[in-house]
Image (cartoon, rainbow, N blue to C red):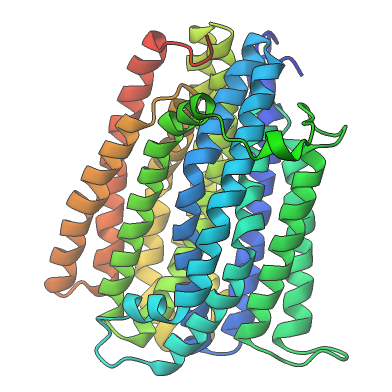
Length: 455
């Protein structure tokens, strides 16, 4: 599809957005199924897996610099009609992520137990079972980091070239394998033993290894919109000029994600001071948040592609309209999901756990999360548009000030005066609306002035 020159903008946005939204929605479903399956084992395994996943998602930020920069540069190169430059960017980014994440995987596997122990440092009475199970889960999942994270860059390459369907098929297959593995390995079926938390980790690890390997193969095949040629000497010869352009765009976005995930780890440490039930409730809230945030990421990816290709073709007005149209669709879908959380909080929490204490702690924060959905829609969608324009540094600084300044300060204050877990999520609501307002202002004023990344 010719994204830049089609007349029906809404149809173009939907065409690009729906596979990305569906892909992230499927990811969300699998995470919910993961947590629901583990939740049947009790509050302690639920908390352990949740903590392990938080560390894993924090590690994703390392790849964000390559993924975001790659998507933006590939999109603008395709918009300009320069596929050879797009191929150079793709090849360099893929080789860089394979090298860097290999060493990251080793570190996570070796220090998994110590990492989990650090997160629950402020728990009044340390639950050794949570630490042991969480460390075991993280250590197994860490084996798949290199190929699993490479899949993020592969998806970014396809996405930037305007192919949002191949990443959808890849993630669908990966997620199906994950769910099947969970069924057989968590509870035991047929010849497979019931491995509990370790079974969930093995399923996630195996699916990640398969998905990442298949994605790389497809990138070098005729199914790729910019098929790469594999020459070992050329593939692992890093070109400073190309990587520096990728990192100039992506590094601030990676720093932004590190800030976000660092703040979440800090919030988890604050929640740990409230006890084991609060930790379990926080994992449910985090996964419920993901239920709406991941589809929002789908719209963010679409906005990056649309804005990037339009700017590559020097059509700034269309870039601005594309970003706002994507945001309107995100607002509609995410607000509808928020209504479910607001009016039926107990129904949502019962899906994850039957423990009354955890359900009670989750109810009011879940209603606050519902009220935050419009702000989240603006944040994720317009941030994606700014990434397509290469404007990532400003977003990084805004996130730093808001999440490690305003929101963290509000969280500590509200917890201190006795608001508990509700205070943690009330702080998020206030901060999110302020950040959304700033990002909307930036997008409307930045896009008409932006300079192309591909010369």
